Length: 215
Image (cartoon, rainbow, N blue to C red; front, side, top):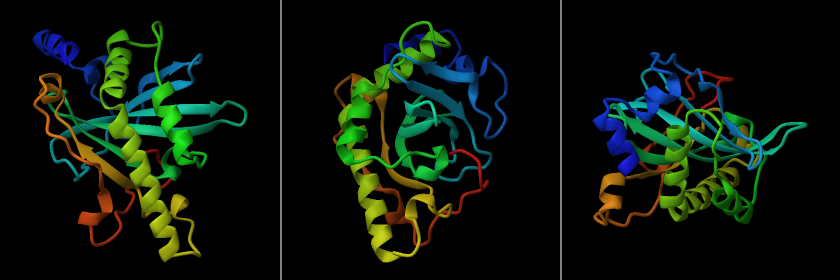
């Protein structure tokens, strides 16, 4: 992606723009306040987890969230973007509903949210908004598939434990994931890959490290 290449040439990253060049504190959202376009109800926030083991070289991740209504506030998580320490996106993933206190949505509603997500000009650092808009445009179908996989996993977990609300279970956090290579995608070299269930490689549920914290 030319935007990221230009930033790298200047010795900066999208993360530095989001944090204002400050060292991010774990679980704090950046920018402060997060990017939000009231016209499209699209919100973008970056944060990092201390010691997150899933990608050892992860520098944190961006969350794209759609605000469904303001009073009371209701949200739908679109996708999270894992960032490498060099400032490049390395994976897309979805999170359980409790992380952003999401309102449950059907598959067709989530697809519509993915397609309508966009942060317009004048809302926070412009390169950060352009970055997330370009990523949603480039990987829209894959993000929709990630949402489908998320719903499938939650439905399967609910069938296994009917007395427990899987969507509110804080031992279940990351649900579906897809490694990406945006440079290979831009050059037409990225191989096709289907989103995978995060939990298939994990014999036990992942434990949420900070109960009550957002993902």
